[in-house]
Length: 286
Image (cartoon, rainbow, N blue to C red; front, side, top):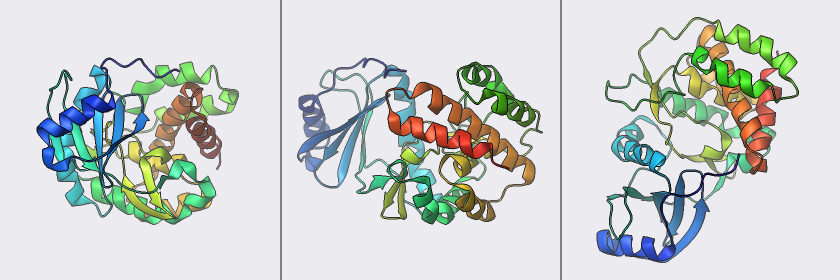
C-alpha cells in the first residue's frame, strides 16, 4: 500500500517560519528526516525535533500526544517524546504541530529479533507502568484496545492473501472466541512494533509514536511479545508483565492482527514487511 498523498505543503522554509514566529528561542538548523504516513519530521538543532501532520486524519493524533504525553511520562521509566512546545496553525499551515526532544539512537526494527533480547525487561516494565486505568476522556481508537472480534472481517480479508492462511485461520478463530477483557480500560500505546522502540546499543532509550494512544484491553500492547521478540526473549518479557493466560492469548491474537497488517500493507517498506513475516512465524510457535 502506497503512502497517502500529503494534504498540506510542508517544506523547510515553512517549518523555519513557524519556529521563528512561535518559538524564536528554539531557532536552529533544520534537517528533514522523515516524510511518513501521517507526519513530516524535521530535526531542529541537535536536541529537538519538529513534527507536523501532513494529513487531516493525523491532526487528532498529534493533539492527543500534546494533551496526554506529559501525563503518561510520569508513569514510566523510559523517555517519551513529550512536547517541548505545542505549535498552532500559522504561516499558511492549517494544523497544530509539535516541538519535541530529539533522541539519538536506532530503532529496534534495525536490529535482528535475536538482538532485541536485552530490551525484554525494560519494555515489560514500561508496559506495566503505562497500563493503569485511564480516565473517561482518554482518546478513543476504533482499532486498538477493542474486542478482538471487531477485527475479524479485516483479518480474514488479509489472510486470503497470505500463504500460511491455512495455519493462521484456525488459530485466529480460536483467539477471537476467547473471553473479553473484564477489567477497566487501561492506558495503551497502541502500536508496539519495533519501529517505535528506540535503542542505544541494546538499551531501550525511548518509546516513540503515540499516535494510536488509547485505552482498553492491555492485550493490544502485549502483542509486542511476538512483534518484537523471539521465543526466548518472549518468555523473559512474559515473566515481567501482569497477564493471565487468557490475556496472554488475546495478545497473541493482537499480534496476528498487527502482523497481517504489516505483511499485507508494507510492499513499499521492506523493514515493516520483515516484521510482519517475523510476527506470523512467531505466533504459530507452541
